[in-house]
Image (cartoon, rainbow, N blue to C red; front, side, top):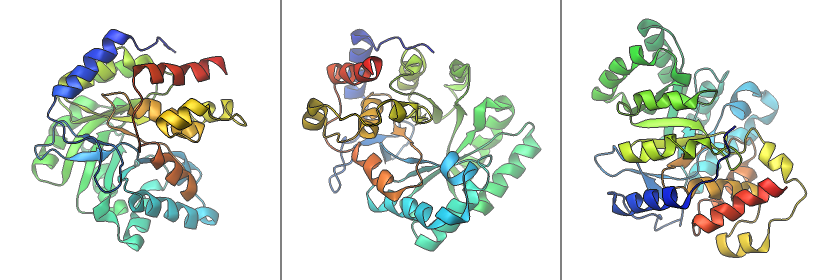
Length: 306
């Protein structure tokens, strides 16, 4: 992994771009939760910087024993002022579980639903998308991704048609595996990209994040805890006093998320959880001051020295 540090020149360039871009105020007046604008939204739509990922907790590890907790996570997501729920057709039964819980809770209108399909061929892709509408129990999907860049050139034209028909509101491409830099191939054509990025995996700072900012593409950060390796590394350790006092971070989970959402090109970080209390904890990372360049460097150093 390329863990090259984020240079001062790059940070200042992105920060300057952020200052001059047509972005609405950074914080929600009601909840104090940081917001980032969707660059290609004509109405200046904004998203809270912390959302929910469902790959493991709602998909692979889905079972009847923890259904109430998972429903509580989705309730907490909207009750606490966040809204992004990220899922995929390939995450076992995650789409169906999310659709059922949203219907029971009646909070679909409060959420921004992103999902993905990964099929080869137009017909297979279209069938998968239609099934996502049914499983999510919604007539409109906010964001539809081509998952892991599978047959992207085939799928983007008809996704544009779905957007024109107002069946989806945005579309994009994801990559959480190797060679994430291939996402640059489609940056001129999409509204969103999603890729892995964390305090100990900083390769996206070199190419993908600056490019997304330059081209006006929104960014979802997947695997913000590095499949929990970041939290495991800090288990039992106390958050430094400066992080609590300056950034309001009481846990290392919050500190890892604060590092990500403080980057000017990041739109939303989507940590996964099946615990409502952890969902609330994660959301708190989006409140209070964002980290400046020096504070981000100090956060990174904590993991480097652990």
